[in-house]
Every structure is written in structure tokens, then in C-alpha cells.
Image (cartoon, rainbow, N blue to C red; front, side, top):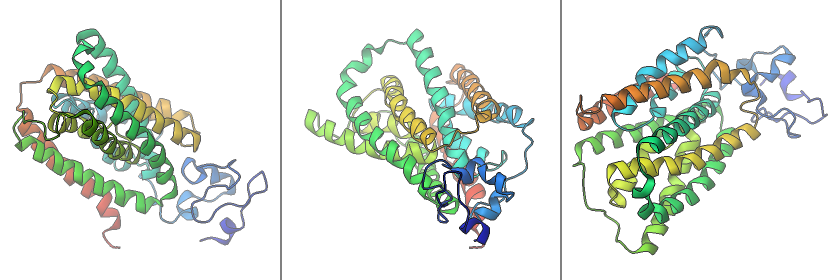
Length: 325
């Protein structure tokens, strides 16, 4: 670690933590990721050797690339009823050149855009009456998810970039395998949880804890976990599960975004114009197109194929960086 960094002090006089590059007084929050250290004339890769140099992508090109990449991702997600956030993350870290610690909060912000858009679309086309019987389950899922969404965003800030990439790789591989398994299962199975309300609420909180953690560590809305949970664990039909999933995702993602924001992840507001807005628009447009094409391709076969693609892309983007280690 450079001696200049070890002795660096912020404008408030507090020392900089050499472990994470976060000022203990809080006035240089997330400085290693939002490039505040440029005032010390040191590149981020020198201050944090665990963060590999980003792929050089011009700021002028990023909005266009973000939109173009998000279109097919949103369309494929729309075909199987998901937002596609798990597929956006390898793109943010790979072709778009963000470090993992930057990509996760950006992905979460895009997920918030897609969830809000999906809720607006569903409110005009579907009735929420079918979700009423699921409200106790939805409430318990939210109760567990918001706790770990808050904690997970804090955890991501304490992990080194390499550690975070390893966590992301494991979670993406698990989700990819889950997509393959889900694609091979029958579309309707009896709920494996008993109908007793106490059991369902307790299980909902437990599932919610997992959902919130995955959401905040990957920057996803969690539909890839919430929908199968509602269908297979609680016996919900697929349409009701899709709507209920959005009701769980909205507070979960919102808590994660607010926590990341408090840590300074969005200190550079230009990321909204360069990445969040164009990628959010592309994801929504793609999802609408994908929704219109539902039935053109077998959803089960598509889930199997996308699960395999997700595993391959996650391995290539995240594992290749540590292959020599």
C-alpha cells in the first residue's frame, strides 16, 4: 500500500482507513469508488490494488452502450417474467468497465426504475385483487427483506473488490442453476408449505432475509427468487406471484438504494444520466417487447438456456479476473 495513502488525511483532519479507503469521519465516504482520491493525483488502482483497472469506456459512449445492452437483456427477461438485473451485472463489470463496488449500486438503481415501471404497467392492465390472499406472505417477505437489504449494502461497502466479485460469482451461479432447475420443473406444483398462517409468516420472514441480502449484494429486484418462492413454497399462481413479487421488490430495492446513497455510491450524479436512466429505459422497453412475445418461445426452455448463459457470462467476467490467484 502506498505510504502516501497511509498518511493521507481528509479535509476534516481524520485519517483514511487503509483497509477500505473510507474516511472515518464520513466526509470522504466511498472515496475509493467515486474517484474522490483523484485530488491526491493517484489512480484508484494504486490506492486500491484489489480493484483492477477498468475497461476504458468513453463517458460519451456509455449512455448509448447502456441502452443498447439493456434492450436484449430486458426482452429476454420479459419473456420469462423477470427484469434481467442478474444479466446486467456482468455487462456493467465487463463491457462497461465498472468495478464491482460501483456496478452493484448502479444495477440496484436501474432495478428500482424497472420495478416502478412494471408496477405502473400492471396497475393499468391487471387487478391487484388476486394478490390480497397473499398479503400476509408478502408482508412477511418484506419484513425480512428490508432488514438484510440494509445490512447487505453495508456489507458490500466493507468487502474488498475481489471479495465482492467472488460473492457475486457464487450468487450468480446459484441463480443460474436455479433457473435451469425451475425450467425443468412442472409449471404448477402443490405448495410444499402447510396452509397454517403461522408457518407461512415465519417462512416468509426467513425467505425474505435471503431475498434482501441477494438484492443488495447483486443490485437486483429479486424476482428470480421471489416468484419461484411464491409459486413453489406458497402455491401462488404465476400471474399473482409476478404482481406480488413487485410489491416485495419495491421496498427492498428502495432500502438498498437509500443505504448505498448514504454511503456515497451516487455522489457523482452524472452516473444517472450516463448509466441509470438509459439502462433503465432500455430495460423497460426491452421488457415490454419481451412481454409481447410471450408464447413465441417455450418459457421453460428459455429459462434453461438463460441459466446456462448466466453461468457462463458470470464465470467469464468474474472468475477470469482471479484465475491466476
